Length: 443
Image (cartoon, rainbow, N blue to C red; front, side, top):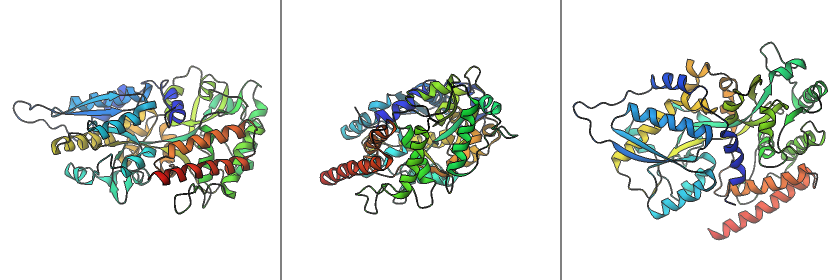
């Protein structure tokens, strides 16, 4: 199984349900702003054509295709030809294309995957060509743009962040008396406050409805642990200072994991959940921890009164797992200065038209987009947009996706009560240390 398949299968399966519910409105609003199209006098020259690779499916692919079409209509001198692939083998195909010298002119790369592309010289630095087209790095959310910076150089243009959020069924929480006047969940601070909230909710629900939905398998529980661990002052450490050994086997990490485990053991998260997305979509769960890509599907679900807020602050400060889609120029392509300039014009345009991309549920990377009336008018997205300021990315390692697979394996054993949280961290750290040692030996 290719690295990352387990992790992102869930993301794309959910994304398939995310249809184009607000695209027509956001397309009209988005195309009205940003930089004007360049229309040369006289006969239009042959456009610069760029091959653009994307790993999207379902809703994400629909919205990106509409963005490409809108760009092509408004820019007569540049033509973007999008080629979409399954995420399962996308990165292996992209690496092969780079090494073979036939890479695309532009490609989407997740921030988590940037380390291997930067370290191996698979993508170009963008500072000079970005300056040439007037792309202003200051326009981005500082935390999001930092995910594309390596040794002070920009290697990608960030489009968004997609974080873990808390979805809730307003009707069920209202019946339990757990909404405030603005119809946001009333959750007291700390571990005790969150557990009390779930227990009160559980007491008001029929037995068939889950208080909180989270799968017993896949990466969701790892995302939740990483969010809580990063909420702790001094938390969120995955590697030691050398980067060659795991360092998450510590008291803070254990406390966060014991809290996650307690929700499963108290059955506030019912056992044996496979598809938590469908469970919440169909009204069989009051709460769901999932990524923002679910918004497009949930807001259309019949009979679901949807609400969405950032992951509750259980510890010292806000934090939630997240990643970003970025645009990068692969090395090993027949890239001319003319094409390079066109690629940065497109990347800049897409980022500045982030309200269109937000229709898929993502939080735009550009600050002015977040402050725009068009974005603020979008239901739900603006409710969790603040999560972009505290997104907790995975640490930078060229095999991070592979290491996350080990975390998933160990967490699943804990959830099925085959080992304790302490044993889970011990065994995950030992297995990851072995992988890091093997990585060190091959470099």
